[in-house]
Length: 287
Image (cartoon, rainbow, N blue to C red):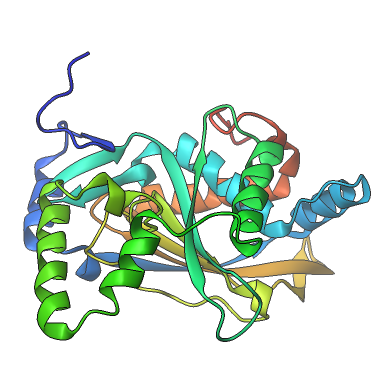
């Protein structure tokens, strides 16, 4: 099928949007002033038990891997989340891609590199975990050279203001109209479905991190440290493992009801972690 001119290289244009949605985009043309904040404490007790069982079987799967797999399933089940607004139009990503930043070494002065993980329709927690491990190991073992956006940032960042600022301005315009070169999109976390940050790995709580106008990522989610908390379940006190999430989403891609149902689906997956062994794209019916 011939590609429509209104489509972009990594996304297709969404035509059937409501008048209210278009007016909202006109009123708030920038992503940075259109983000909504979702603070949610989520019960990850069953998920932690599941990951521990896998570890005892010798599998190198972490809670972060499980989070990534769960988010991937949510995005396939809730496709509006995989949309973005650019140049006053709504687009839908061709793929589900989750990005994060990884340090080359566990040191304050260690370099950071952007990592993008494409979650395919037939992926599950095992294949997603392998993708993450392979990418992180490759940069920490210095088996890959910087390329794409990682390389461009390193070069541009060292230029003097008089040269760097106008060049960045040109890149921003190209981004707005969908003409940014592929070399600057490759390994660029701002060109993903969702940016995530696992702050729990450094014993930090979840924070809200603004989303940017550059790129096409409509959301950013941070995960805090998992802690034991006392909760009331069916009138009885229980100690459960709780993780706080700080989520920023572009309100122009969907309404609050859609976002709330998506968070509920994420909790359902945490409560039923065996679902992570199924294809990421498999439809989930909440009972």
